[in-house]
Structures are given as C-alpha cells and as structure tokens.
Image (cartoon, rainbow, N blue to C red):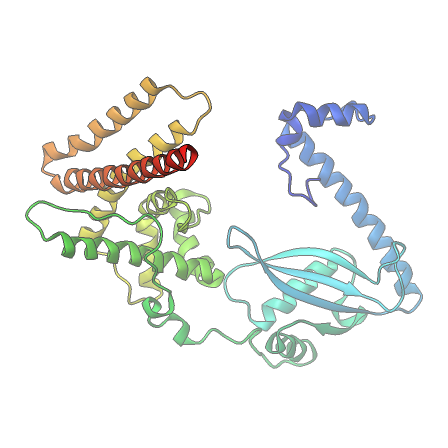
Length: 370
C-alpha cells in the first residue's frame, strides 16, 4: 500500500479503521509510529532484493545475458530520476521477462559519463556488471542511447540527451508562457490611473507566473540554479507553486511561496543570465498583494469548515484587516487602497450574483403560478 498506492506511513498509525483491518487479518503487532512502519517496508524491500540477486546469479550461471532500458521520470516535486529496468529472453520466477531495479536521483544535467556511472552503481547493488553481464542499452531518446553506448564501448565523451544549448538559457521571458488566468483583481492606488495600475499588477503577476513556469518546466534549471540557493537558505528543498484558474485561492499560495523564496529566485535568475529581473518596487507590490489576498483566503477557509461560527469568522476578518491597515501608519497606503478596491470588486460580484439569483427565483415562481 505504501509503495503501490503512495499511502503515507503516518496513515497506518492514525487511521483506526485501517489498523483494525490489519488486526482482523492477523497483523496484531502493527507499529504505532511512522518510523516503525517505514522499517517494515525497508526490511521487506531488502528481503525481496536478496531474492532477486539470487535469481540473477542463477541466470548468469546458465550463461544468460541482460539488456537494459532506462528513462527519465519527474516527480510531483519536480525532482528528476532515472528509472532502470533489466530484460531477459527467458522468464523470471514470476513469469515476467523484466525486472525494475528502482530509481536513481539525477541532479542537474546528466552527461553520458554520469549516466553510465549511475547505471554501474545501480547494477552493482544487484551484483551485476554493465560491461560483463549486459548486451544492449535501450532508451526512448536516441541521443541518450547513442551517447551511453559510445561512452560504454569507447573513450568518446558524448552528452546524454544532448548538452543543453546556451539558447535554453536565453530570453526566459519569451520561452515561458505568460498567462492572465487565476484570481484577477483591479487595484487602485491613491492619485494614480486605475487602468495603468491594473496593467502594472497584471504585469507583475505575469512575471511571477513566468518565473514559476521556467523552474517547473525545467527540472535541470530547478536543480542546478534554484534549489542550490534554497537549500543554503532554508536547509531543505522548497518548490515554487503555480496558481490554477479554477482555484481562486491558489494565486495567494503562489505569491506567498514566491515571496518566501524571492531572494533565492533572484540569485538563480542571475546565475542563469536571465532577462527577467525583479525590482524592489515589484517585491513591495507582491507583499501588498499577498496581505490583501490573505484576508480573503483565510476567511473562505473558515467559512468552508463544517463547524464554523459567524462570530469567529468576523473576528478573524477584523484581526486580519487591522493587521493590514496598520501598515498605513508607516505610510504604506498602497496596500490599504488595494484592499479597498479589492473589497469593492468582491461586493460588486456578490451583488450581481444575488440579483441573478433573485431574478431566476422570480422567473421560476411565475412559471409555477402559470
């Protein structure tokens, strides 16, 4: 269940119905900690690995050889892995003709020499030799396959998958698709033209979306440039998050994560020689944007709870509004005016929906009477 369905180890400790199911099936000593559950999975994996090693040795003793196939796999966290399979002309004990040897983490770009080194290291875990026990390497990328074969059988260094050309790092603003979807607002700042400011906010959010797309669409850039700085600053990997047109609150999450990692993003863009640059004014705008949207996000989440109370929701809104308006004391009027205009747009939208609902109800009543 953990390996096939991706169920977290903690679920086996907290989900009482699942624990009861295991107990009824005869597993009376199921650990109560995620670490204990993890040890069970790891120990089982080691046992299966030993069985596979024994079976591979028996096949090699019969003079059999293996072929390899591998492909790139990208996780939901934008991490790159190499998936490795071995194939044989006869059947294994489970009637299959191939075995999966697992995943190998790929950091940054991967030249052919690195590819071969990772293959050899993975095969050695199963007591196999790339040079002695395999006869072919197959992948869906011709350049990877050719590069790997060239490095394997000669000293020629060929880049696996083709080396990333310099053009990939040029003009990232053009390569990343700009979108205007998501939660669209019309901000107004004192003594400024609303249309100009509307375009300004759109351009800033579009720039954020463009940067997010750059690192989401290129795991190589994400590993080599962004995550290097993120790990130095936070001690762990944190990914940029994209917003979604069908989820109005997702833009708040996207901007919040971007604000948290903006120093790392700026350093990564400099390392990439990217044309995209953020000014302090744009960072300031994103801060104000996040403050205003956070009120809506927290309020909506509170209203969606089954046990919500009106008084509690109103108190949360008041507290957030006071925190947001307190910035005006230091002269930060942009955030306050933006929040006011955002509030006007929400009220306008609610009035339109109420009017449409009232008209629809009146039409239905007239139809029922007639």
